Image: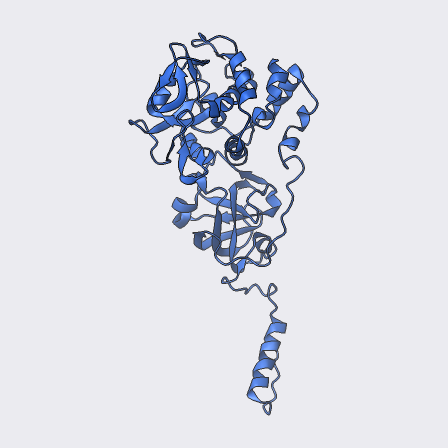
Amino acid sequence: MNIKCVTRSRPGRLIAAVVLAVAVAFPLGVTGAASAATTLTVAQALAAQDGRTATVTGYVIGQPTATTTVLTSGFTADTAIAIADQAGETGTARMLYVQVTAAWRSTFGLLTNPSLRGRQVTATGTLTAYFSHGGLKNPTAMSLGGGTTPSPTPTPTPAPTGTAGPDAYYASAAGKTGPALRTALHAIIRVQTKLSYDQVWDALKDTDQDPANPANVVLLYSGRSQSKTSNGGGANDWNREHVWAKSHGDFGTATGPGTDVHHLRPEDVSVNSSRGNKDFDSGGGTVAEAPGCYTDADSFEPRDAVKGDVARMILYMAIRYEGDDGWPDLEPNDSVSNGSAPRLGRLSKLLAWNDQDPPDAFEKRRNQRIHERWQGNRNPFVDHPEWARSIWG
């Protein structure tokens, strides 16, 4: 590069001339020498895969495992995260694959920290291909939060067709009723990521988070808001309630129906014990620590605010588990003495509860979180409670 100076120029003019010459010779985004102090958007980082060092901010989408594959639940390692400019991004082409080296795995690895998904992170490292995909490798700094606001702010990108929302998700069931609807819904929702029983703890801390206190979960039957960290088996701890009692079909806690978060909810240990494996029906004596709940020798009645939630969880299980994937064929009936049979009642009461207590904001948010962050499938009766009567009359 040649920079010509006129020695007779005044000092201010000389400095200006030098600065202008440097700017022309090294425009930002061409040299690869962009400062890491400038925070880039993911879109900017993807367009600058030239080995420069840069700082990038984005939302954690999941764990990349291949050029076009990103896990959003069931994480297998702590070695990489995919980030995007939009928290709900679904197109891998708009994600940056960030290598998570050993120094950062305890904090930023998704296997260890599954609740990191959806949070904003900032990473500094080398912009270069990772998994044969736009990436950031060898991070020298990683932190939660956005740091400097990226500029310009990216324009939101619509989700690809087929993932835009519930209507697209249920496209193959549109216009169907009765047995045809049931068959279509089963084919849709059986495609899911399966969790381990340990992963259920983390899932419930996310899906059942108290909207008024993010440090707590809301217990299903008790309605009590309780610290997420007070889970376990001790008195007044909360544990994992199987709304479809696991003995009804003898599926235990093995990966499958025993770990399906669509019917697992946090509940007080003693209240969980009071419910046991009883069928659902109305009546009985009051349940200690669960106002509005009643129980007798063979049935349990949940409080009014979650009667519909319970019904829709049971109906989901009946559609999801049809006996064609190695698990029992689960089905609701009108009995309250089902024992270990893969049946659960009372169906007439469950259908009435579904009508009586329509989905509220908490239940809808829960369904969305399970779909986006954990299992990749939805409860169709939360999205369309009218389908219950279409299938069961």
